[in-house]
Length: 422
Picture 1: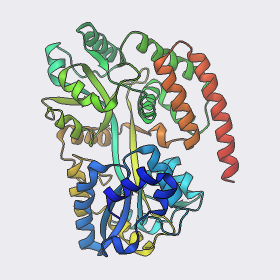
Picture 2: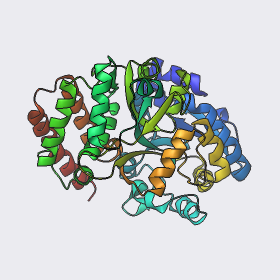
Picture 3: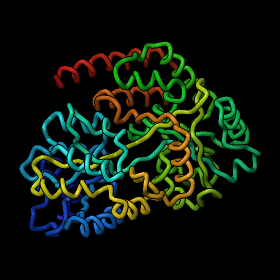
Picture 4: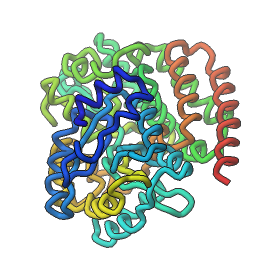
């Protein structure tokens, strides 16, 4: 079953029907691994990388897409319990991957990981993001860094420069607002964008506290949490953000037209949307790291999505072998070129100059890097936290009450996670 047929099955049959309608071996090309993902627009990139992967291993990729994030997670979790799961799956790193690994649903990929590190294709510092109880259960599909994109023409017209301190950043925000431009495009729609801005702002406010919070070594009732929420509340009340019900897909065109001045989003693949909105890299849009509120140097949030192999895959050995070649430069270059930059292999050049400049700066200057919240705590907790924070974005009147709710969720979900993983 190809992508369109599968999507029709999802809509017509519902989740149960979709899982039973999974493609059989005879409908997948004989030299391709069935690869489920949630990014339909990325299919040409998957196929281009798959063509090179086939030359190296004899196995390419057969992408099948479920574009709705909520449906995607439900379908994948159900398929992993069947006798006929996909060969490869796009999935989150960190706790999202560990959540599948602890259920015994994933194949161990330590051999592919170690081979990639030995070849110089992979920074072993990422190991923790794909490790569960000593085993490695995924390989990096993409890596991006959350930065502040801005409209170069608007900044130039107002005499603004990319800020390097928090006071400068607030000054830029107020200059934009005084000119009738909403400074920052953020939204609570679809939940996960809340995690993006929460991660960026919390890491900018106090990176050590944010990192400890994600390890259950800090509390949502700490002084840092209260100060952070009061800062966010003040920014919302001053009109520095778009309305909470804004549609995030509209932000690139809003940035291009000058309706918003800045958009927090990943450097690399997000540049595609800006180019489609009519902006050119460097002259139409540029980007900077969000400055730290109190620390002398910024902290940048990273998003690392992964490839995982279901342990019941019909082509388990072949998929594992393919993963050992996935990060090879000749495989990664067409994939990274398609997304304007995304590869976790630092030998692979990112084609977008803004993205490459910031990647070089992050690496060469030793910028502190932390993981996005969406992957950085147990998934049920992350969903609950982002729902509450989405409500706060719509009504920021009671930050203390929101934090109390978040801490109750944290105590409950961390207790469950620790009990379930003993």
